[in-house]
Length: 186
Length: 224
Image (tube, rainbow over all chains, first blue to last red):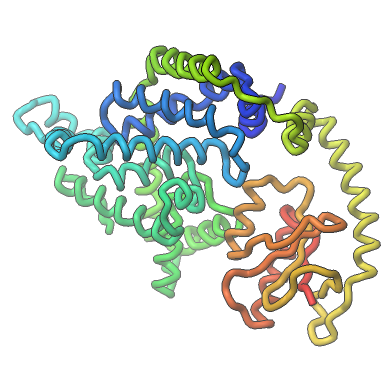
């Protein structure tokens, strides 16, 4: 039995089919939530935002033209909502948050052990990237978006997508180096 | 193993490694990357770094958990409130949605038989279309279509293969920097325009490359 394609669900949602909306939500809400959470870094805010994202899907389903995948369209909406929410936050809050994300409590013995674990360090450094760099890395590696799809979601040219991904990876290598992990690149 | 000699080309290939690791490159680029990885030891080492990043990004995201039921309750409460205020009017008839829904209901085997029948019909159509193909005297390897529609520098006519998916077609158009400017016309023919200005020789070369992608296009010809 094949699952109903997303595009078909959107067609049903445009006709007011609540069940189709539930299916689409069940299929995508976790990934959309994680994408938003990585941007806003606040679970309660991320939950509120995904409700808004899917409400927009409900409202705009009739205007969906199928020029991109439904998941790409939803991530575009999610990104817009997340960035709007971030803009509403004060700079002070963001500064505290950024400091927390890259905090390096060297006196903690557990952290010393963690430093020996390359995978854990890599994940820590992935979390320490700027929102712009986290976003592109997540879209490419986790959400499996092509160059063209990332360009559509982020609203930048395709060549800029490749350049931004390169610099995000370069920054990641710098953070790893600061953690004592030399990768021999770049 | 050798290193790729041309540095700009290597840089271009290296930029594609994250998408290659995620499996989201079109077939043409994926083949280029595979070839480069086989020939360049240093590039292959860097690809291993990309794969590490990919694995840990997935791990990191998978540990983020999921939203609580509150998010869904809030969403459907909002939907109910909207519907109570202003119930949406159902769209009377959406042909593409109906066709899409109709096809999605079939088992793959049924669809395969339908595709086979469609392929026979297309072969018959091809015989008719071939009669309007005019052989280009200067370039025996390519053909020009003597049909109405948009013509000019870089104008190409194609028929997409029945099995090509929307993503494959989209990647194909992206890879050749082409856009659909007309169609479908009789015989499911679409007119493409290359976005970059190309010489007649470059256009013929692109057509030959496109013709090799038989999984995506069943006919490629230059427009007169």
